[in-house]
Length: 147
Image (tube, rainbow, N blue to C red; front, side, top):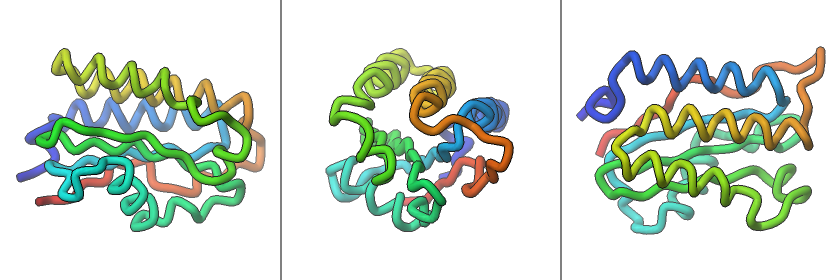
């Protein structure tokens, strides 16, 4: 099963473009990981595993964000690194979670991911504004793992 079974290539390009645009407003690093099933059952714990597998903690300001979606399991999680969590409250991602859930219920994963990525960029820009010496520390491409 390929990523294109969930998001067509054109949709993948839209998501990557949303990441690039959001990262022009913040030094934060945004990644999207998609897989068919969340084998652990707990999307938050799986997102933590993926975060570590992708070495998202390897950013200068520890300001990486992972949007994790297991589309056949109908679950997702949005998590941030310690640099973000030290500065924001525990409900920081609630708006983004509600937005993504609404889009996914409507069957518009691409629209939801693009909207949420934009919101994340806006939210992070208050704490981690983009600077002239900003370096793209993480891939903007969608990561994907087969069953």
